[in-house]
Image (cartoon, rainbow, N blue to C red):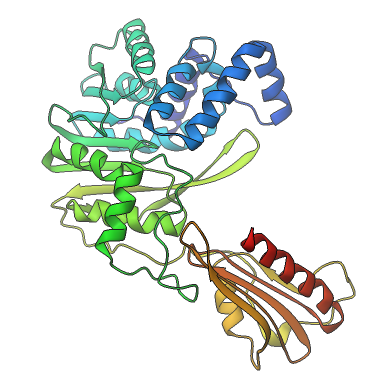
Length: 396
């Protein structure tokens, strides 16, 4: 009998406690505990490795996770991800319920892998990761738990083929971790639409390692196997090429992607979305390449009223809907505008103008950032100053 959601949650809390993880709701409490557990050398080493991981290559990523796997470090470091485990584990458990042979690609320490293996002792689990230290910890913990249905292998899925055949593959934060990579630009700053240039798509897959990892993952998937993936692809510029890479390898959506939201202690993280896919799926779920709907208050030019608060704009929007609001400004008169390219390949447009009774500043770029600010005529100087500051930032 499949466990209920309450049973899964209770089992997860017990499992995370067994691993030594603790749940915190305030940064103050978490960092106070971190200071108690970590030596100054631990903190220095972690900070150095994290910076190299941020700007370096795959070897720097492996080195970071090797350090993070140290027994005195991982319970504290991964406690920051407690909410993440609460968000992902129940969904992963549901996917495992319909499978027999499960691969956890990029399993890390195997926290989620061992959780699902405990829930489903009749199923077979394999976890792979390229961090040898992480795999050593994962196997040791599995042995301590007496999990005979679980094994771990040290495999770098970016450069090494995988072995076996699986009817479910799970990958969470493992297919492309290049968080600094902006993704695929839109055709211009006026639209969110991407072109279909195969050269740009191939370049994204190559520089992030996504293409090679996906190819190796699909190679060990059964003919009608399913895939659950959740990557840091919430931004449209990263989501579009990620989805195109999945679709190009014959993976079809079983259901619309599900946005994921959790906290790293106090900080809210909008992650994912999570995808559930299948080879040869009978479903016909359409891939969506439009911006995620935002919840900013709707814009109505006739609804703008003169404000008595000179410290705040009459209207301010930093979400995709800012483009629609800008397009609705009737009688728009552009006073100054600049459009230029940046070294990272993005095209940026900055525009200052007016429409009857008001002044506005609009910024847009080809990596989906939009910003519209509207003020009274008396506050026009604020927008002029802001306009010049943005131009200086672009120039630098």
